[in-house]
Length: 439
Image (cartoon, rainbow, N blue to C red):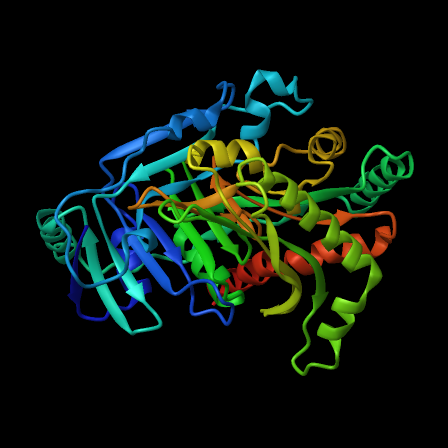
């Protein structure tokens, strides 16, 4: 890996210049107050693509055999394990792609369920040190990237046009929650994550919608990806997995438990941590993630490092725990995904039964939502976030989902309200753009 320090940049201005180029991607820390997100990365001009469509067997097998970069190395800049080589996502629907999972009730199209692109060079912004770097496979790739970027003109795009928002009926969502509670009462499952969808007609540049979402909510693990025939716009704060291929350390930081954050803290964070319903919802998922990590861990290495931490985000407090292990020597990136995907915090426990119930009671396939997005690093490790607070733009429409974990103590009305609280990132962004369009 080669790294060259360059002058500081305006990330949004550079993103607008790059956004019309093939394979544009932006991994964005947005200077969040959370612990994740030291670096932001901007990339375009990928040279390889791994694309798997719905219906493929063993979709994670496509990621086997990806090698680390062994070319010349510079002595400055981020470590290879901190820098993307492949950027992309795994859709929630990847679980139902493999026929061994059974036949799903909801019809899926042929959108990619796994999409990763290899970038021989990209921009890295170190928000902690205040440095900006061009990083690539070697010096030549860095020089090529700098020359291409320098040749791009400044670019402003008009405000996109967004139609009236349609949302899954609150009554229907409440009925889905009550059905989940019935299954819990019968002892078939302990927790189920149930989601509802917002959608609207969309015309214009999806990057401008994502910029409005970035303004509405600062998070450490955002991503914009131009998929060619679709775009993924994520403002997520939840770490799914981080795997260091050198040390074999695997970490997950599930979020479960939410409460509104007021401008002045009136004790809401303490109430969240003390709420027995939120504790139960959270603890079940922590146990699930311990079990998932145990499938690939060295015996005796799975541990909960920091349980029930209250973390602040724009408009919300969340309960977060850190679970970690050391993976066995033979474990690969694909093995880790087989053991842990989809993320437990957005499915339920036991996971497979929860997935079956979700398929039965929700109205639409989730697509990317509740999948995972991020990068494979230059050491062959993995850094993925949970695809929550995530919109997709495709076929002239924009889609957004929000959900919550249902346990025995859940109040359906409160759960419906929680989806609307979580949707504010999207709704506030749309409102701001519609206001600009009316001016």
